[in-house]
Length: 168
Length: 267
Image (cartoon, rainbow over all chains, first blue to last red; front, side, top):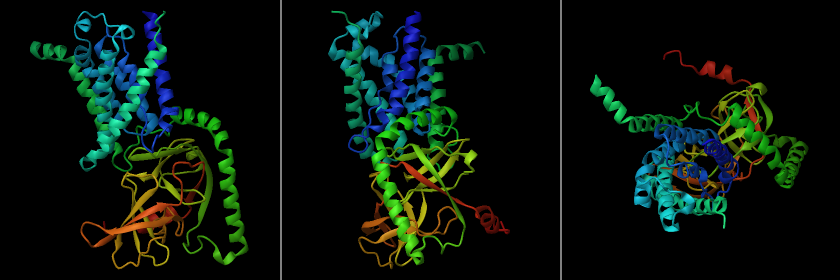
């Protein structure tokens, strides 16, 4: 139990620092940045206290907002995907989630892919529509969501493969 | 009463979500209005400190570029020294003090961008102070802590700066549409103004923030706005906003005196 808590604390701090200090300076093609800090929300243990989980996600988003000077944009998006995560889990993993036996490292790639992409898409849509906050820039919002989303998805999948402890 | 408590207990997840989401939403709204986003800002002790220590490593990678910039500025200053008639801001009439600073965080990919610099109230820097580089303007300080300050970049959709044409003094309002970090827009220029592509745009000196005559950029294209009464100019910035190291903070020593004069007694 303790190792889960400490692992999540390290993950929280590590992801915030990586996001703020490295990934936000990528600016691929001028505006495309991956937001991999939501990996914390995606990989949070499934058997959890939901109140704590939602609150931690809010804290994660707010910390990012402090670094990026973006008001409450990331906090709002993080809290949203933390709240709807059970629905997405049920959709992506079906019966295995019902029995509370999902382990991310042992799931099929297709299921993991759909789970990641749905959460990332919703998160990015919230981030960019709140950040730009202008309906006349709808095309820009969708463009940013799509391109950054694909970038984030690739990085997240790579990272989970890289750090999974599957012994062969 | 029992029912209410039951309701809260049953929906506690949703209620917490709603509460936190509205807090975040409130902060977002605040950040969209100028001068209100004080609470969540990177100019505080923790984030400023982390950015500063990382920046001290980062600086080594840009040393060559920085040297080049300083050399260019030296050349320009020497030229101005030899041709003293060309003195830069004598005509504005105010007295300005220039304080050097270093950008420790730069951002240009969002629609509301801010920079953080390593000078704060300890270096007698206050809000509403202009920030420039050797090439052109950068932004206005909008939030300070003890040793850090946050700069509202000209690449921020809330930024409004008075600017004018260099040759004719027709003035307008400098804004950013959030699209490209290379271009800003000079709006509300009188349509009689004789604008040509390639004209230089400078600061107007009608506010106490910037002295007159600081270069901004040159006209790339221009068109009528939707009401057909004013021109909008597309301005290519002299400054490369994506790579800024050393900046100068311009402090107007007469600012309080001027502002106390300008307060209208009839209001």
